[in-house]
Image 1: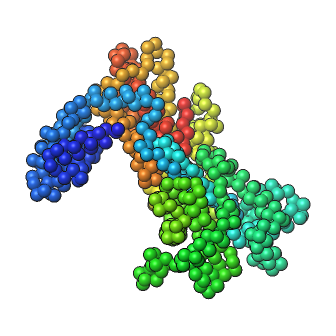
Image 2 (image 1 turned 60 degrees about the vertical axis):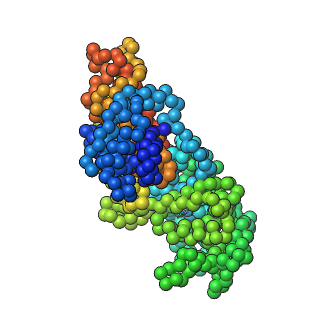
Image 3 (image 1 turned 180 degrees about the horizontal axis):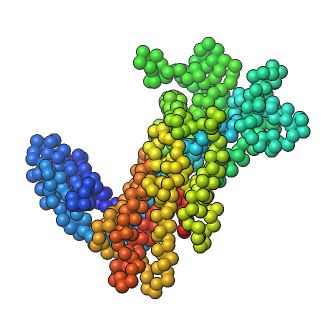
Length: 578
Ligand code: ARG
């Protein structure tokens, strides 16, 4: 149990014992200033209001009834009725000793769930571009946190490999191969290939009609079309997987369940909607109506599930995927990491799936939306020529920039190669810059800021970690210098200690709300507290008391472990030096 949870429990019991409305809770918060102690309980104020009593008096009664022996060294009532709590040093020390000896930095979830996460999910018609970065890395961070907490996570990469565009791409590929070109070469630049197919489609009537014809043949399972399509898909998937490796993202080939996988059941899904009276024909198309999602004039939301030409839509596939995820895979909670511009789509799909009984009523369906990555001009991030920025090129640039930075910082590395450092710093910087922003907001992509060694950045955190490692290298040369029982005496030690004990609570918050920036902010606070500790509390200085040294080494070790684990949960790597 975390310190906060323990205090909460004790104070809640005290409220109950003195007949206060315990459901209002003690309203615990970290104290805003060191002189106010470590935690502050503000619950007496709300309780007093509810009972029309004097808050200070209630606070006193609460304190008298609370069993805080051995936990709190000193408590006082301040202002209108706040309770300030100063934790006992040896209580903190004992918790840190336990944490230091534990295999994990936080207990697993009390009720592990089977959680399905849909993320990355790029369209395969084009190369991955910056628009796919956010879903890929935010989703991956949340997946890692959920797994660390002991949940069973099913990753689903719902790749877009189906739809009308593929007719045009198959026709284009057929022409290239017909001219004797090798598929790998033809598809080396997917972006160019797409543009060329699009130009043919727009300008060449024969090509366009062949392309349209191929879509139909592909959907009907024609072997020639299917083979061309498969070649295209294999190469496009390989492009994406190269990016995942470069990004240190945990998605594997087995996690891909693309749109085409649901093609065989779309007819059945639509029939189900029609049978239940949820969808009906409207101007040749089949449309599902949702009165529960009506607009302000009371007009129900209309979702097309089959076009008049018989083609199915993105929404139809998502309905099929939901049924599979809930009823076949047995997911208890389903998370989607998709751009905020698809919020309406997700809302409609969730409502339809529930209404049509395509999912278990108990399943939680959550769309975790995110904002857009913007360029320095505040508009969606584009190349100078106005094109989409390829992710592969962006990541190469990040590594190149990091290489320059690292060479300038430390030209004398001992065991780590500059290439390895540049890769971890460059990729880490891009990921962290994104993850540390509140997910739902747009953010400006800024090389300078993300690669800075000051402030809330990956290089700053990675550097804080290398400091712990250089300390341990020096300690290794000193006989008897090893971590031992923790003693808390200095404020800087206390600051670090309290943060170290909060890690589990932060992870639970990320698991609940899917906001990785909460973990980023925590790691930044921890690194800053650690830097303060490191400056104020000598660890290996000549003549230092061996007991103090052992305690401080234990704190350093826990800080290092927490930083490395936290960064790893964000998908960011650390190194011994930089
Ligand atoms: N392929 C879609 C796109 O690039 C994202 C898919 C998200 N997942 C889903 N189940 N709809 O916009």
